[in-house]
Image 1 (cartoon, rainbow, N blue to C red):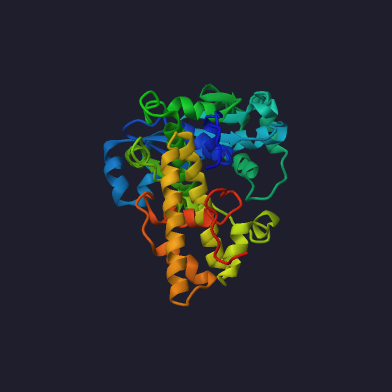
Image 2 (cartoon, rainbow, N blue to C red):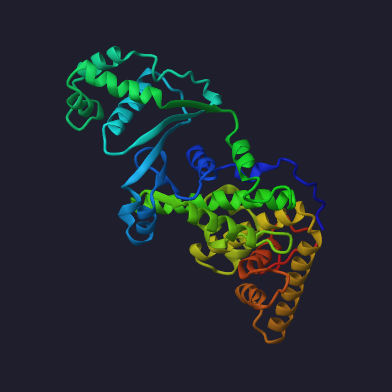
Length: 380
């Protein structure tokens, strides 16, 4: 079996997800009873407290998720350089928000240290902002025009400006993943479980939230998560990932995969060439390559958790299944690449916790990464 050195990088599983989603997750981890968190409602991220009636209505009527909240924390997320122009846009958006029916208890500008941003939103005085707004010649749909129509005097604008300033907080972080790690300790029992399982749980949570947000964006709807739904997700993840079982959700894993068959690394890989020999259409080739990636990632997790024997049992059984399938096909004069693939996939593997792990191990063993038990749908 391939020699493996444990990866000590800890929270590496969080890489690849957008900063805004990770900020959402970071605040989600602090939810309490009677609270909900929202993505792209009144701001990039919004945390709201809802009263008993709204909690009851929450399940009955989708629109109730967006109204009647007793207070909101509006969070503007920026992973970019904040200059005077962007600071102006932030404040103008908040002026409109402060003037709406929404009750805002806190305004937060959340940014990343890599851009060395200074806190400049209130660098301009209320008078300077007001004069800039009044001088604007933008069209009626522009936010600055709406503020211009809203505030008929400097005094009126100053009241809103000062109210926002009093509730304003600037946050700049060096490593959002470390923040998430800190806030996950209790939810995912960091002190009680293997560190690999702990970080897998965090990765699964971020994967779950990413999929839900993407689905909401595709449906042109905001994503809203209640405290109860958050806790349910945490408990469900813990039940799938523990010392006895590792079963990441295949359906969510698949939704986040992008297989480009034109990529040189894929088109020149042995597993791709072996699948091509089976005469599969492109959509099925992609599905099988996703099986491979799913198993490959899980295999790494098994190794990190010192479950080398689990990997050995899965792959030894898969190899034996292939040998049995091939012998049967040769005996029945039906030995061809597609039949080898399908018959091997059909055979049981009790060491694999779901079908996709079983299928993925089949594809993985056709790759150049497989040293001891490499199999072929088409003999080379």
